[in-house]
Length: 192
Image 1 (tube, rainbow, N blue to C red):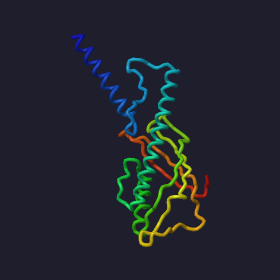
Image 2: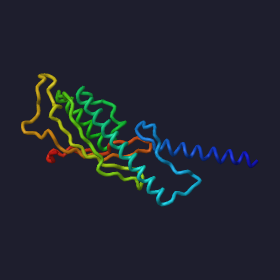
Image 3: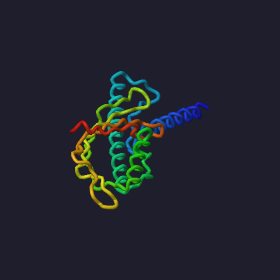
Image 4: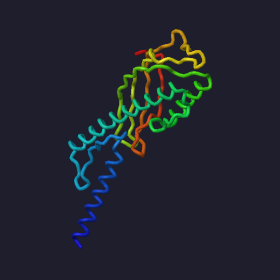
């Protein structure tokens, strides 16, 4: 009987640890977060180390989500694909805004050409409460990424329009373990 109870206890701990690891793994990263043993209580030094580990993992996962968002959005914009599957990296309200932007370009016969230069960095991470969140600040350079008319192939960029500016994004960890862009704003008045 004691052996059976021990096996059940071990099975529960293994299942709990597997569930915690699955919930904390982000963006296909095969490296699980540091998870405390369910049978021990971490000391304050260990808690601080765990929080720093969570912050570092959240930082990397949020940055990867932002980079995937930019890559997906640029690809959709270059193709003129307003139905692009972006919800893996973007959530409402940002998803609605991005889809509207792509639809308006499509309706106006516009696509983008080239590639922007993106230099994002995480400026803030919050892992003390759920859902985990992060803020990303990007120096976004559209100098080699232009909006063109599909009909004429010519640029429709407004003369004097800023081509290097700050983009701010709020990123959130969802229940499915994916980090997604929740809000994004191009701050064209803030050169970088």
